[in-house]
Image 1 (cartoon, helix red, strand yellow):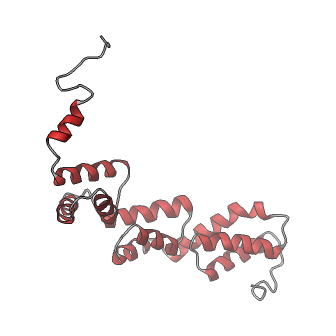
Image 2 (cartoon, one colour; image 1 turned 180 degrees about the horizontal axis):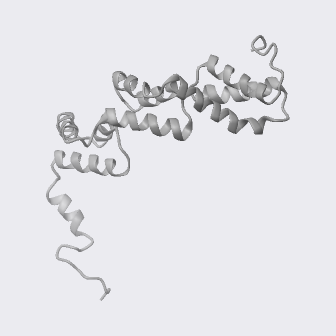
Image 3 (tube, rainbow, N blue to C red; image 1 turned 90 degrees about the vertical axis):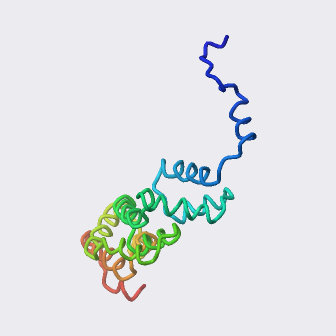
Length: 188
């Protein structure tokens, strides 16, 4: 006796035998796959469609299941994009350009991407750039001015900030520290 309560059909081989005897309906499998994937994190319709295709769910079945999930609100690419922008901008400091690139890779439609990134205005984006530079500024002390400029502006560029904004924000931060920024624009 193992000390474990045995239920009818609870033998180690029972689930395998059930699968072999009655192949699962593709629509049922598709729903189970989507629900499992949506349990951990929100996903876009394209991400779910790709997962279903990878698991060899027929396209017409996948389309039917995904449409039903959209109808009941389990898939909402607009809400996904809005939440993504909010989270990644505040959490990682990403600018509109980088956020749009990430959403494109997730399969969000261009109109929804545009709508989501427009949540961020230029002032908000610049304020975030200033915060990022302020956090990294101390780590660049002791380096020459041009190297500091390149490191800080490069960090902003990797996060999707426009070059003009990045240079302006870095220049202002360096000036606030007493760094001489004359001729800085010409050297870049």
